[in-house]
Figure (cartoon, helix red, strand yellow):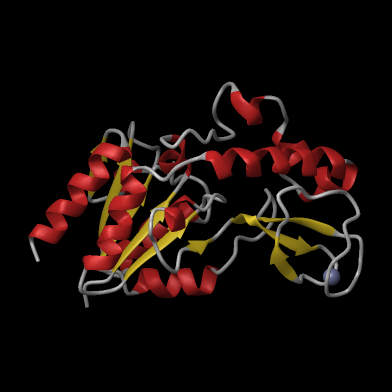
Length: 231
Ligand SMILES: [Zn+2]
């Protein structure tokens, strides 16, 4: 078994022009996290939150997958064993780059979720306050994204994959936020080789066997080429 498990974060999408809440400037800078990315913020001002995610949806639809997304899709296609991509990103750039079976632990901008019955459906480009749920008709449609204070999705499946990993790679994620921070420890305990890709070393870099610094569009394709050439 030479299964590869990859965790990607905001850094990989940033190279496609999508900003993060840590960036200065851009969409996030105009809002406080507690207003647009918490259940309490949504309860307080759903119009503000829908407006924010409608804008992010427009921005994400314009973004193109980059060389790092495409290299990971190539690895998934050509590696003889399973390659699992887990992402903290809510855009669909991995899929647009050709990846399959991407695990979106923080949900996706492409999804709508009923806050009452948890029914899920494909989000319209613009969501409005009070839009009815197609299953229960409650006026409670919200973006299907995991907000601060909410439990990430698919955690059981993620830990199962990590327990079987031969390589665990974290790309463009600070890795210091729970539960992602716990993944590298779990992977090490299971005997995986661990690699971090980042622009600068993260606070959790010392937990990894190897740290590769530089833009993901540069470092990830080279890493994928090397892995595949060793087969
Ligand atoms: Zn419902």
